Length: 497
Image (cartoon, rainbow, N blue to C red; front, side, top):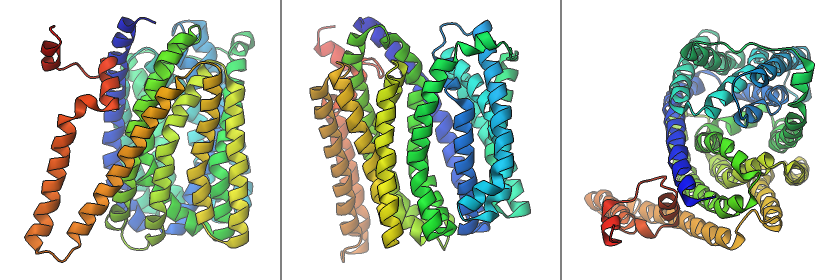
């Protein structure tokens, strides 16, 4: 594919990603306040029950959406029968998945060894009912490039949902009340999008039209089931063998670690995924661009995960109050795992879009087997650190499997990828060493003015050095190549332009 096309698309992807990051970022900062208040009202066992309900909704939403969002983002035309057929499929899936979850809520809670989670699980079925339609409407908005509109709607829906959720928690003070925020947000997003669009998506219950989408959605569903098992098995093991309160601490640690990184990942993947349709008929385009894309994502995710792991340890007791010491201990491992997972998720999305579904299944199956072994060790020894070890190792195993497959099918420039990843790892280690140095200065026996001013001087010097050397940093070079950020005029003058 010509570089000119990539430049134009690069600018479009950057704008879309920035809108997504802005909306997710605004929501995340408000959620800090929401989490700080709710964590002081509901105890660790309540958040454990809430996490069990979230695990149920995650499974049934995955079964209900069944690749609908991906299919919507890959549509060649967002008008006509294809959209209405997807809408019909979403309606059927939502009704079935939500109804089944209501029926199975007590059984689900008992299987986790926490019967008190049944009310929250039953209530969150409303979110499952709405999710397929919400995913469809959001996917069409992304496919049509309405990123700004989607960003604004997402912020308004999340803020409205958290406001209603906070009222519910203040009134009822239990795990069921914690589900109100996610249910409300799930309902508001498609409602506000369609009000903004001034049109509604009506279902068309025509089996022949719906059937056209089943092969793709069923393949994505298999991947989703395997991915869900890989994520849920360690949480299930922790709850069964260590108790819901431990899972509650895990849930609180995620709020300040993996959730922010997933925010960045969601903004990137949801904008990038529709572009993978261009690679389906042009493997050379994938070989040229995928390595650069993964390197760019790694340079964002790995240093951010290092910084987040450090910051969360200090922020959790400040935001959530006393009683969350275990969450502080778990936060670094959870954050590191989330950072390692981001490049892998981007590559998996590309393989799915190119219909290499079986490879993504194999990779996820490896993760499932690894997590089963980790939970087995946890059950025998009674230590949560086996679950944390599996959590960190799993994304590395999955990504290595996908990279080997992509290399063998000439989809990746592996040498470029290894060099880029090495640079990202070095940058991550530098972030950690820099923090350790700053901490040593701050906690030393030096006079207070020096302990305060010296870290500021060191931080300012490091920031200035990075700014001056930015033209040599791999992520900046890649961003310039695709015009994700504009070339500076000084550089153009030096090049005789």
